Image 1 (cartoon, rainbow, N blue to C red):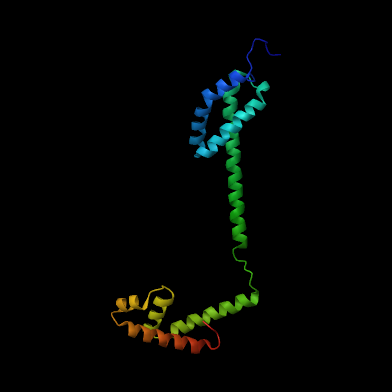
Image 2 (image 1 turned 30 degrees about the vertical axis):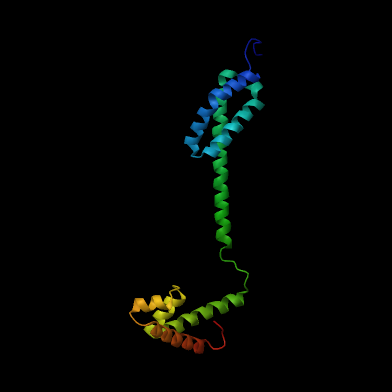
Length: 176
């Protein structure tokens, strides 16, 4: 049984003095260990709450090692939990990344359309293909394309018109 003259960490003034003398040092240690000020602040608070809840079991000469041990263990648990969440999130993203709301028929038709569209673009003359891709893919204006090609805007408009007519004829009913 503990000696009656022995001081207890459960005494409010002793606990407050202990907190004021060790909290900042513990926070700095945890910040260096875990790399996060916010996490360090949370861990310090949790460690001192745990000390208060278990003050009858902790002698004043063991209190410092107790709060450090509690804080480090809580921090390790928190980091493990974050790793599990990260792995789980990555797994979920990986599992569902290929899932769409479209029917398999739609996905197949879309794939076939894109293949046909690529073939049509490839069949355009080099100048028509260049103008079409600069305008529709790279979002360049006719003026910008004309300046790049050292031709007039009218020449670019004519090339684009011919490209669009050929694409429309090749695709048939499909609207662009």
